[in-house]
Image (cartoon, rainbow, N blue to C red; front, side, top):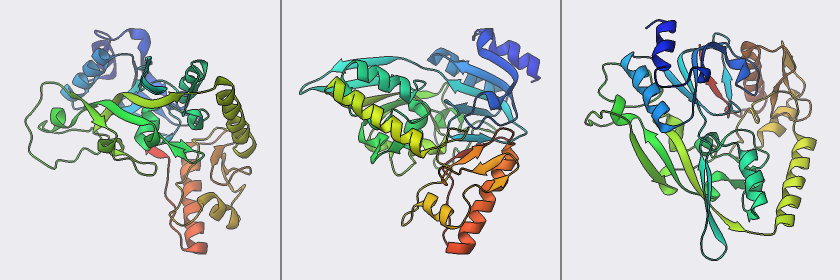
Length: 330
């Protein structure tokens, strides 16, 4: 299907102002780099999501799901097919017993927005995530965390769309990383399921959602009522700590995962790599765990710098450091 034809097909069920042709991904990632997506769609509800997936499947077209683009690096040639940005933004607060609160959050809600809403309602337990960039969907997918807490500590369950049965018997499929492990019956449309905290298989910066079989729709968090002044004080302190320790230049947060027996940023610093530059990409002079865009970086600059850092660290320490950032596109 030609690009214009695909665009026109999508506009039959999705408002045209939510669909963009040849859209620069640099506009949708915190790194501020990346080539164009053939089609970029903002998805506001389940109906639009199902329709977009249906069109992608019918035309054997790659579909990539993103949130706020704060933990991805898009290559310079961009992304073929459809990029679907999930923008489900409902927040529902339900008081429970013993000051406990059940908060249902759409996958497209930013962590900062949710933290502010919880603060207004004197709800505590989410302060640790208030300064993490990105959305609830992305945070659940990678089990985001800070200051000794992770999403797994507050998540009760997550509602998601399971693509496995829908795509399993298609002649070919370009949905990333869905592995055929069993024979299943073909579905007429994707199944919506709710996974318990245990079923989400949270580990350090990883979850069951990392294999891209699921599209996260919303999640339920269990928190508690607290003192609004204490919540405000904690959030202010954590935000100040972030400003002091982390760079302000465009980045995707921590570029590398923490090691099992070492602190990656400390290792990179000890290898003399702080400030090392390739093109417009730099190992942050403020925090060696961050690679930043100094203003004119390409995705290739960042990729080349990542490989250089990994190579030097291995040669000098024997340690293999692993990426926390997800790389997408051609």
